[in-house]
Image (tube, rainbow over all chains, first blue to last red; front, side, top):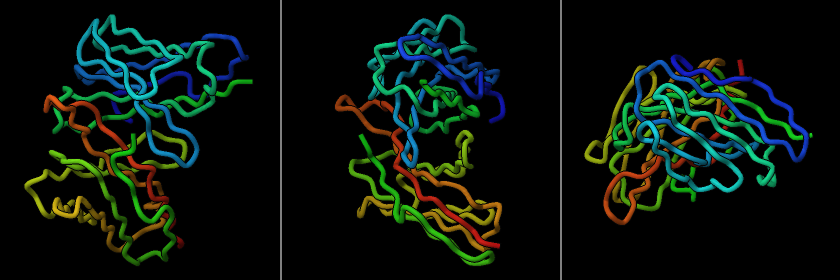
Length: 114
Length: 115
């Protein structure tokens, strides 16, 4: 988990509320990513960003929004439009978007909608 | 979309035995990566093997890649209870323009090493 922090570790939300998950990295990486993981499943890409002020939709972007105002930060907002938001959310970063880069992951945030 | 798929879904072995996990993928790749995830934690990168490599070692890990069969295997030798985790393969999905797009993960193999 070194270099990437996510907060909070556990988050509870009532239906109809928006919630923002924090992701910060001090690795000086250009690229950052948000994934969703459901029980017993692999990771699915929500959004990714190659550079500040730029981001692209992944496979399951509906109901989510992101911003990349600073290189170090890539917050994810889970909106009320996301039908099944309860999941484990993982943030990652890499030096660039080039395909030879490994990704470094944060510890994750477990979101539960009540 | 699932590019890589691991097999088996779950594996249980005794400490000291070797563990082999397989990954199959569908499209051409530039590299294949293996990651480990302890329960409720983030993923940790284990090893990356490029498409022009056939085998790579890192400590007790041995990875093979067969691009003709579109498959890879991860071998953990002399397993320990601390190796208990989920293991994922990941490949880059290349978009039609040829530029790298995104890392896609399989659903993982859950390895349990019994003491």
